[in-house]
Length: 504
Image (cartoon, rainbow, N blue to C red):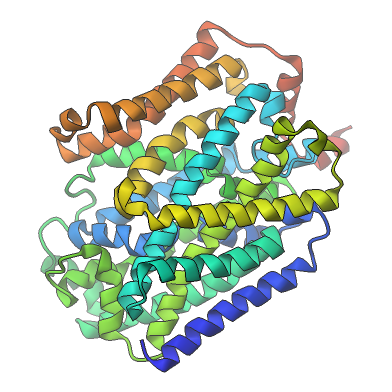
């Protein structure tokens, strides 16, 4: 890192803080803070959804997979999310803003009190909040690793720097700040990604590298499936991605809740799907080429950073680093906002009954305190990430294994086909999924480790979500639940409120 690189990174941080302060003027109440007042345009929501869906962990954990296994990373991650989002654009995305229209929600979990009951809502709120602390902790750790490789900054200070800036603009600006910084960050990352892509091409065979690269890489790197990332692994993660990216990950649900109508939410989802289909091909290409340009790395998770340092001149290194910062800050800022909405609207009312009498201004203050606290706690987790298996351990095993049992009652609860699945189905399926995770992770780890790698990962990550899904459906069939208020709510989510009014 040269002086010019530091100027660019420092300027980036100042712009992000400036956007947060500017967005603060647009926040008048808790609805503005958490859902942008339901006025977010589809293109901004789609870009923000895309940027909030991955972080610098991609350039650490996933870079290692690209370095050691090749093209399969695009197949199981980017293509999987694309398929998941196309499905969700018609099944799930339009229903989120309609919930806001009917119930005036600002949290993705508020509707669960009507759809199921208060205990179900609280169970999912508490467990999901705890899970996201670990997930965001992985993002801070990944950014700290990259900053350490780029500039020799100690891991602790890298985590504190990135987290501290995000803490400022997210706490003061809310969802408007998150979405606007997402857009600016996307542009920065786009320029940085294009620059490194072109430099890699010119360092090898020029444009011809696009098709000559694969024969020069280790065997299997050009295949759609390689190593432990088999058809089984990809199928399991397609299910998890469908649940996660369509709202099971709360910050992504918020992008749809903030849309004016169901149709705009659908367009936002399709835009995000298109970005996942195209952009990772450019973004990942330097990682796929890394075995030729930086061979025999002892730590493959450093592949992207080492490549940038080796090929880019002063100034452009800072631009690439700012692009990496942008992904982490986009995701973690939006996560903090989503968790804060759940704490403010779902958890606190159950703990403190008097909270329901707070003014919207006081509720806004409570939300900002929750954002601050969540980011601070996730930074503590980042500083101890080694205890949880590092970045990939937190991302693939912990988050992948636990997100499904929480997301299944949330997402399937929106669909008429699952109206007969009530509180019992939700709670028992959640408990069964958690039990399977504990058994595979802590009771039978040696037996599972003895299996083929793809089978081991599929059982550890896919076991909890598959068990939870089957139990949720079976209980709804065996012991159907009926509640008139819940049925009316689910049935009403098929059309926008404006369409219903016109029909009348």
